[in-house]
Length: 81
Image (cartoon, rainbow, N blue to C red; front, side, top):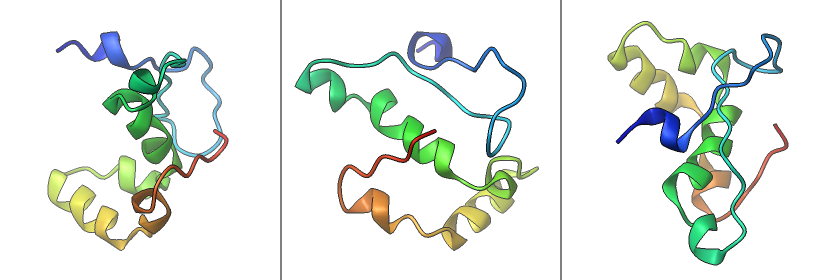
């Protein structure tokens, strides 16, 4: 799978939050709304900067476990990004 087929990095250098924000094409069908890329982008964009910029996978997992992800586990919770 090619990263660029599912996700896009913003063209602007200034974003709110962390510098690794992702964007994906909007989906209009129910099948498209349940696609992995559409569901994961709001979660990724809502993570704190210290999580996404962790230098190792071990630190990333450790910091991710410290995050409150319950809003994302209960269903569709979208944060404006």
